[in-house]
Length: 108
Image 1 (tube, rainbow, N blue to C red):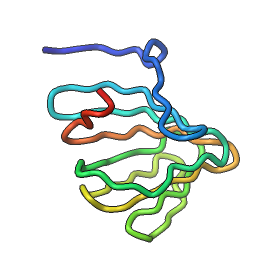
Image 2 (image 1 turned 180 degrees about the vertical axis):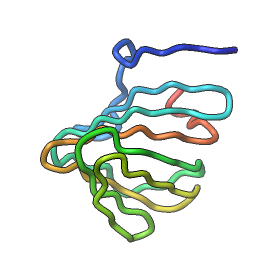
Image 3 (image 1 turned 60 degrees about the vertical axis):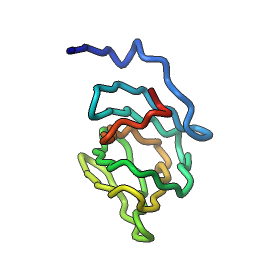
Image 4 (image 1 turned 135 degrees about the horizontal axis):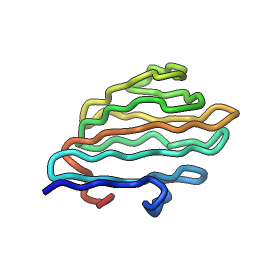
């Protein structure tokens, strides 16, 4: 089955204070368009899903397994399943597109 989504029509889910996501999911993969308010924090967490992402706009400090990088432009990242990671938006906020495989059932 195919689908089309307009991000403007997707109701955002609150992930943390100042962090929302608009979710689009297929059977085996999921996109999450994540908006982070200025200086918003995604606390350290892990999940069994692989996560790959790309910056759309703004800046974000992204930490994977204790290593932190400042991402901007179209910077990309990959988090293997089970690996701790966290994020903090820059002073202008951030917009990132994450992909998860398999989809995170709690976000469907």
